[in-house]
Length: 303
Image 1: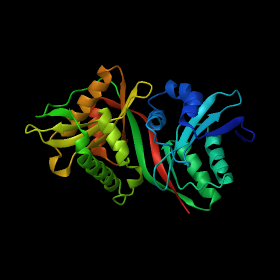
Image 2: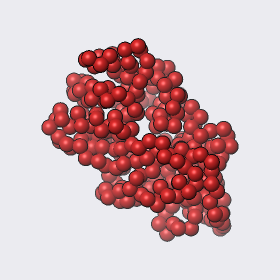
Image 3: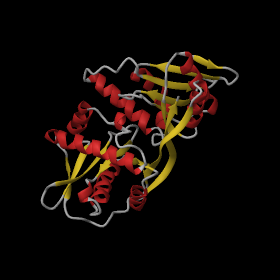
Image 4: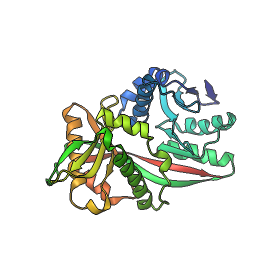
């Protein structure tokens, strides 16, 4: 435990996702939509460990306690490639600032912070101050949850699960999806490549049936939509990708609607993230019945 002076707050760093869930699971479950990224990631790490995939030594999970011992914030640093951004969920401002100072005291360099506002802003600002740097916005995101699904205009074709032998195409479309998102936000293509899932993770999602193609009337894949396995009853939709030559034909709306319908039919809640710099995707999802929940940001610390 690391005490934050004069606040009654304490920071607890854990390296075992199972221990983290034992300590913070009830807190995450209390607001499973807002907490979806951390909860999903913890459950994924537990599944990987069961498959014999050990987490990197650099991974950690954060629990913020108040003076009564209650959990009042969580976070993680489990990204798979540089700059290994942290991801923070809502927490007291003093905890976000104290976290930056605690990391500096540990000698841990952090050059990127993602997650819920305003915690990420407070933490990034303090990280930058400590190294005489500045904070740059990589992109602003918004978390949505589906209310009542509004079916889109039907289009030819159907939803079909992607298979293991589709791995190469799925990996190619994941890369294109992230590259397009970079360009739409005014970033260099490939700026978000560190956030791309590794091939073994894509293969696991294919085996679990978490990725789907929209097949056109000829049976050819023209769109990719995914959904993470539910954590505390919430399934996060993504990615949502249509190749440029197939856009404007309604594939994305119909695919997302059908995946979302299946999530709700199974008793779950559907949510998704959008890049606020992409008005087309934001309008698509609101038309389907998705409503904003919380704004988030990906920030960089420039030395």
